[in-house]
Each structure stands twice: as C-alpha cells, then as structure tokens.
Image (cartoon, one colour):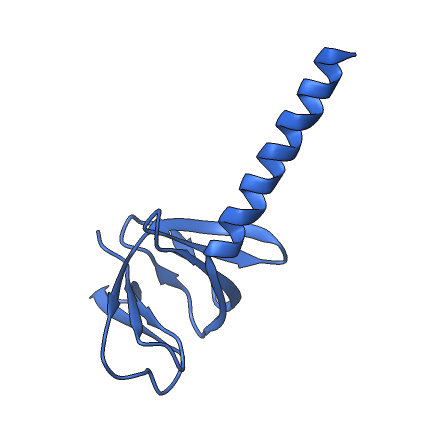
Length: 116
C-alpha cells in the first residue's frame, strides 16, 4: 500500500513537471512554402507547422498533427522593434537547397536563429 502511494506521488510530480515545461515554451504557427533543410541536414517539408521554442533549452521543435517532425537547437536574439510579419530566412547553399537560418513571428521582438 505504501509503495503504491509513493508511485502515485512520483507520477503526479513527473506530470506536473512535464506540463510546467510545456507552459514555459512559446508556441507559434508558421507556413513553410517550400522544402527547406536545417543546418544539421534534416529536411523540413513544405507545410504548416506549430513551432515550439524553448529558450531555456535553446531548442526549437516543428510539429505537425501533434507529431514532432524536427527538433533543432536555436538561439533567440531580442531586438528593439517588433517583427511586422511571420517570416523565415533561408540561404541557398546549392542549387535547389535552401537552408533555414532564422524564423520571425509577427508581434514578437525576438529572432530565432538556427546555428550550424
């Protein structure tokens, strides 16, 4: 009986920690108009993604239909001026190979960069 109580308390603690970490991460939606490659070589297909940025972990996740498609490290840079629109910045490293370098969300002052 005592062991069962301890197990329930531990599970509740893990659940609270998990949901608290989700609450700290900022989520936005972005439309990727064409296939892009992340700096580490992962491919992000064209489509609409929920983007979860966890600044404490320096990590960004691209989610489609409740499934994490890609995870990559990121660095957030705060600017004085708010971004006018959602946008992604890519560099063409080879013909037909666009590498995602940064993401900006409308109304935010941060720029999310994706380092190599």
